[in-house]
Length: 184
Image (cartoon, rainbow, N blue to C red; front, side, top):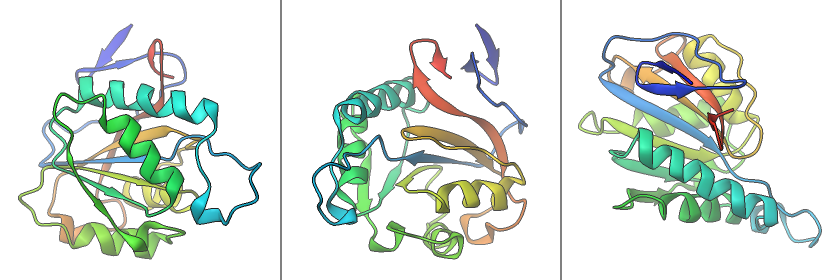
């Protein structure tokens, strides 16, 4: 297994660019696989069995490679909240979490608004939400097109203040879904 910037890479991992030392880290996590069989409202959909396995896998990878997350911003959707509960249980100390109503069915503009409000004291933030907003956010911030399947994540280096996030203001460090060989 190769290492890029201290991150193990394997399989289909995309390691696009690196910064020597980013002032901040933004981690984007798409919710784990949800259940479509119940007929409930979209916001109330739960995780299916696969999703209940995916979320802790993502949490294990995060706890190993990004144990110092300062804040989790989580969509109010049941599947996103459950993803974060299961993922954060893998940390020795669960990061602080905040539910943000704007993160559900959010556009890139909505997500940027959420992130630009962050205080600069926060060095590492994870955003747990939904597509297509998350993929579009990564594209706007880094200029890279990344496909986020369920429970996939992307790590971005943010050299400037949160308030200045916008077009090409971050660097995609790595992306993929946590599996037995790291990110795949």
